[in-house]
Image (cartoon, rainbow over all chains, first blue to last red; front, top):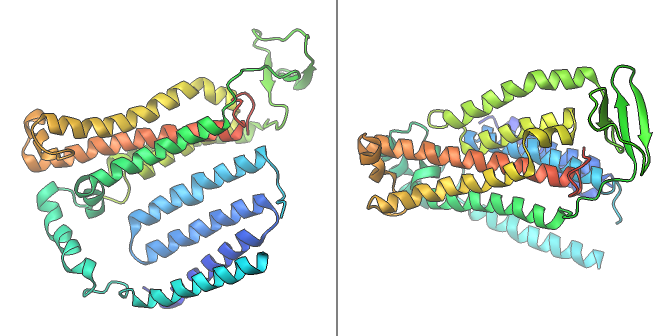
Length: 81
Length: 276
């Protein structure tokens, strides 16, 4: 485990998470959740949990982003609050 | 109220952060989990189940009961989306759009107008979003079989490499979703209808639970695959490996179908007529 890489990826996870809940654009929030999942996937693979990283990449970064985009497409793009 | 919520979140987050110092360090050999649970799996997994990937052995064999209910959770997520979103009445939309294929002219047909249903020269297109792009459609058509092949490889090769039913099922479902996005929802529904996806979703869970019950009928406890040895005609260790494979296939079928089912309901807002 390279600790510099670990710190960079972990801070990217935190930035993506905070940005996803504070952004007004819901489509952007969905994409940011995809980026968050991908960074989590990198974190899992840094820690050697390859199976979990694979699941995170396929479910979190892949299909759930599609579900978010589909839900935004059918509802509204801007939040009410 | 917003301020109060912020204070509560900061307080609870602080407690969480403070208690996280009590966790064992990453890869600590002296932590309770590494003392008796992990060493058993690392030392005995290959001689118990003949599966080189310990994660698969733990997921589908030692902790098979957990995974059964994970699959059930995914199936009930599909059911929940169905009950929340599906609009039962199939009401035809008042305005429909058709494309004349040789010329590319779009026709707008109001209610009462004659619809060119049977002719091959007209193709119905969505009113909200028109994905007419030859390059995208053809590229996705070329890519989809390879994604499906990769998904089957992930399911079948889960014994030896990272992967298994969940990941492979999600990738297979993503291939079908890609087809639905690049073409349109109706064409995808013709290939894999809602009824098919619902049936396959329950079939996958049934394969998993049925394997467990079959093990009971063979005279062992629930999901103890070594009792399948006499059924397959192999020794008890290989029987556990085969049992894991059957269970993973069931999980893959369930996850594929449920992903596609959720996508159908989400993207068409439950009408299953026009979608993303």
